[in-house]
Length: 202
Image (cartoon, rainbow, N blue to C red; front, side, top):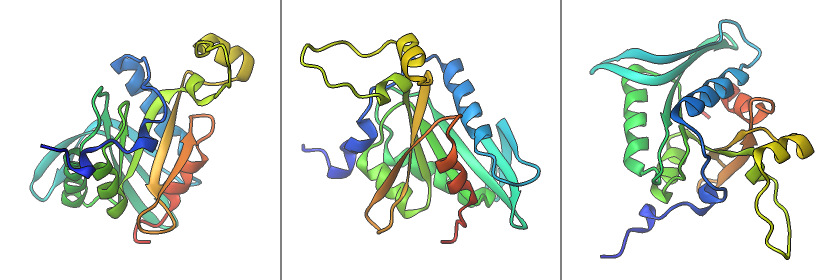
């Protein structure tokens, strides 16, 4: 049986190798990245493993982001997936259901693995942002005829100032079937900040 097209990996989410990082390093990076996304607002908080009540019960959310912006209170649900295999549509659907149940304004999924095409399409249709984590050294592309190995983390930091870990943010593009891809790091969080400030109804 041939796999459905939506089950294939969205190639742009698999452009870079998956990071070599422990679950603890992954959680630390996610928290650092979320905290760097603070917009010009008051009461910006990031909470790990918060139980949020919905109309159908409580949910243990990997992380929540709460902040006030332009006179409105925002709740962002964050699911973090330290996975080896591509993220399926069903996982993004579950996040959307949680968002609806608890009345959150936004949702974000962060993964060490790429996303299947169906997951990207569903996220785009429902305003859910996706992130993939990679190593900073992989974002520096070199052209070499002799097949030199990738930079080490130390070389990447010493020679090019590249962080140990980086992420790519995927959000809805200008037209309904396009996806905007932006690099984000804790030192360069502009794309994440812009997504946080964006009115979810638009």
